[in-house]
Image (cartoon, rainbow, N blue to C red; front, side):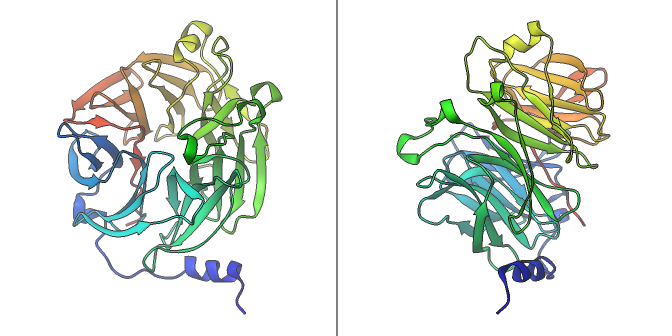
Length: 362
């Protein structure tokens, strides 16, 4: 009998049926969830200048999305503890699949495709077992669920495909939740966040934990540089009089490096980083802090703090053609360049937490 490992390897190499590519919808630079003035939640395709190319309805508030690397398909995830993940054909606005987790699981708001788009991986919570899971879906054949494997921790949130195309980096936030208690955090005294690297079959390759004194610093969101350097944004669950680092950098085989702004800037962030991103040249990394209405910029090589920018309700962040692109809950789309932050346009919506790049292969 063919093993699951060999089956998945063969599936990942399979070709996909012809369907419209991203050029059919104007080749957007990003996807983002948003709330519009009529009360509708939508998945939006937009360009780096802030122009909206399409907006498609969602049944409730979205969080992040996953963009297919070839076809104009996107998975829109509910805000955790989410019960919907919709696969949308963006060229027509058609829902082509609605993903359902097994009983006892819920989504955690993020997912990522394999390099050729044949597989989709989703972060999930097995809330009865109190264990993080990664769901595996056959994106080439109707998004049938193939199975799941352990995330290597509790509360997996964000996840990225590594540059080798054969491994994942998973942000295990360490926070146990259960839908019966909504967004309540059930294990703060014992939480243990980690950054787990595994292959596409779930074999753990490396795990990174924070120092014991920072075990309440939940690792939440990730960004990836081309050389494999992972940036992670954290959210502090400890004493609010403490102001620990909210940015971490890690290259496999080395120790994590935690970065912080000077005290006068760090104390304004309320222990919360919303998103993290590298600039297109990889020289700059930044975190957004919506509770502190700030964006903090660092040198990605030295880790030196290079600036704080006051931006109301800023959260979405991603690499743009030049510099970093950010979005805010006020509808602003802006660019962070070497000379500072500039708003490019204000859209007729409230952007949600994340700005997901559409890295189309063709």
